[in-house]
Length: 254
Image (cartoon, rainbow, N blue to C red; front, side, top):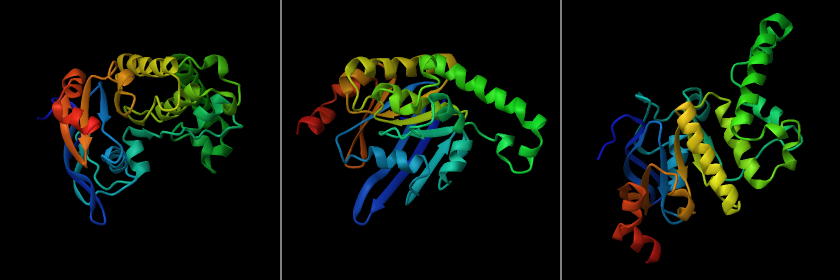
């Protein structure tokens, strides 16, 4: 089944490691301006698939299409420039820089970073102001504005997850691939993290694709779900449909 207005699609996507087919001829379509949840037990191929889509791995077979364009085999930085950005399970900010400074690092194409343009202060000063304004706006949306001048090392686990999301959005991302956004944080902060995703989806029209194991929390916020096992899609649909699918229940409970 194909999804109308898909932002991101895979066609026969395959990634092998020796004899292991970690991703095995996967067809997926991630709807635009929605939150899609990717579930499955450890080793089911979820992270490998995301690594292929984000350019960290080159698929052995198949194609990846983003926003109508074939991006198969493109490098991570090329993919980021197209608006498809990936965050990781373990946030890795520059700990001694402030929250604001960590966001500003993600701002794209700042002329002040060029050796030549940096000498022409008038040419890049306005861009610096735009970058700061954008970062402050995101900090407000993520409710990190009161922490803007604090070193990143002082943030809680949940706040670090939000900072990671903010860094992705500084690149003008339209689609965010996120790996376990609720991982290693308490349930209250996990709900807050997902509520921010819903808010960003609604306000900015963003598309989210997330891997998450905490199904009791994540499924409350997802619009669509794919379940994987042994590198293949075994179920897809609305959260309740997938969670009640006998194949998914058997996969998790054996």
